[in-house]
Image (cartoon, rainbow, N blue to C red; front, side, top):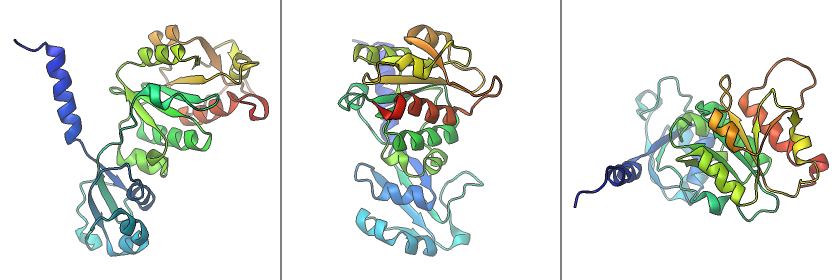
Length: 261
């Protein structure tokens, strides 16, 4: 019996995912990946100077690096990557299911990204999410930034510790969070209510904050799926925020006065 096309595609995607690797670069990103026991590590290329700086992390990882002089450093990185003499080939992290990652904490906060494709923005969001205690950052498998060296370097180590999930359908993920008791709020600069107003008296509830790409903002389907559209309470009536800055402010604001959540 011939397999349905969707089954064949799923099997092909699974095989492709198993073969996929990512090259991380930069001393900080490589060090944190070496120290992460959950990270599958394939190949480590270093200059002699980087080997000295990463000696402890290399020892703990059990890896044997390829040590090359700077002029012979041949890791397959994009031209212009500031690698600081360190590059590590790894498998992407598997954080598991949304339901497992987004449940368990008291009054968890989650960030969802609607077609935010810039790896630098996503890296910065992961860094803020870790600092501000978000349970997860969630993007989509297509039209969102995958794990890359640039993302990892911008995240400054947070990629190894902050759950970053990529789901097939963002609207389905929003509905799944609603079923788990989350208040789902979509950020829109023209919304009537502020984040603080939307969570007032409900700071002990889990909250999911959905942010769109700069320019287009949230897609119509996303706007229809969230519980409410909200805005960041700005001091002036003009200007806009970078999406990574907006994510940090939204996370902080969602916890209410004096971090009551």
